[in-house]
Length: 265
Image (tube, rainbow, N blue to C red; front, side, top):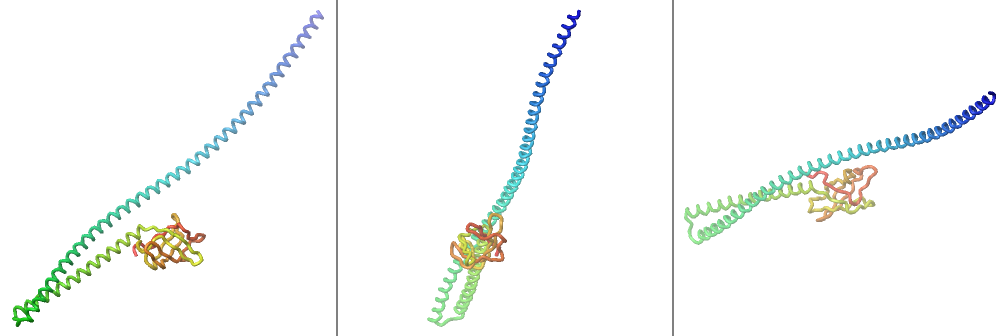
């Protein structure tokens, strides 16, 4: 009986040791699995944070792109409106030009007709005068001569009036063309002499540039300053830089745009 108890005790001890060993191995494996899981969790968290950051950056880029798109669409709409206005103004200018051209043609025809009439009257007056010199003039001939002279004077005055009207029309037409050219004018700065404070421009007399005219110098939408014309050639001109007009921190450079300050003047 004692032997049996001893054997049972040994068996129980061995079983306990085996169970302890198995439990220890399982615990170590569980710890390793837990550590690996925690590492995977940290990696997943890191990836999640990176994804969130990328998403935030993408949203910011999307916002910036949306703002740029809206700004571009606004600029396009503005340009379309300006183009439509310019087209309307051009159509009106062409209509007025056609009307003025027709008026000038009519006046020119009238002038030619009146000139022919005056020449005919001069011939008639000369003939009547010669006849009155060659023979005693009677009252009827003298009256006729007086009438012809009066008509000659009247037609001459009318001719002068027509010439003045034609000159006035031509002057107004030239002024209208000049204003139209100035409105649409855009020249460039060809050269800058900082030492003598002047610039050379790509526009001249044929563009409606006159001496002492002020022009605005721009770079994109930024106004750099103003210049005043001192010398005009057919296709170029020289202008003095107006120092007080220069924007602080900027200076006029070759390639800058120039436009008329007051196109209507």
